[in-house]
Image (cartoon, rainbow, N blue to C red):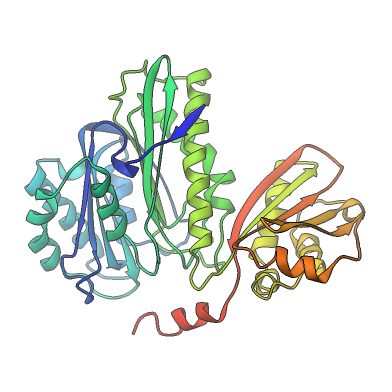
Length: 407
């Protein structure tokens, strides 16, 4: 249905990007300012953090995309521009700089910031860097990579993905960049994620596709149980692929949603695997329960459990911790028919059946749980509800990273 391509956020037609170091961050080898510009005004959909404390960029972006359209995205790292008295003024100032240097109306600019909360953000380095930022805009893979690097904070690797798919005989593309490996427990959004597509789709259907996707993708992701103040997921559609515009829930809409879900779920795995201090990706799949919502609650409880996370770090196959998390998840579950398996490239280990722990090889258990990707497969026999959640192990380095994050 779709195939992976190169180019990230620049893979779809009509998008250029760049990232530079402008001086927000003290480390001169780390980029800290990114820009994405579309050739045309794009249908745009967003979801944001549900944290009551919201970064000023979110409030400005909500206003700018209220009509369902945008044409550019500017993002800085190193400073969240949150809890600052002049935050909205600075965020609007960033948009004004985009207008001055690109001609894109400031009201068509999405603005985002990430980094330390509560520190003043100056427009001076951003203004000084705009000429180089705009001058380096391009539609090549290295341009997407530069933008992806510029939005990173404690991420250890840049995160990009892109796919091609077909709508009505026309090749379409969808791609994106994202960041975020700490303060990750989204609620209607995730960290910073910017997705572009050249598919033609109305703003209303684009927002519906995004809003329907997040409950089974980014809202099933956690690193540490903390929901950030700046989480933003922005999806822009240029329509330049030439397909007939999607204005209703038809086969083309379902194909588009499947491609979007491929992007968001791949990002979920990338983000969890790169969680602060993480050494292992945890993927929990729950199936056979009475409802999807019950499955979501159960799977999220498992990957959120500090005891499960620590157990994975120690490669200690303690099924009791998984059962415990399922039991307090709030999901309606028949625990007497639960089975729990740990799966990885090293093998498949049954640890619990019919709600009871079973004997297993400790040698195999150590091998299975020592791999980089660990799947926890929880199966019931009560219904069709199923869900997947993404998380990571809890390590000593997580405390080291966050113990002096500000200083």
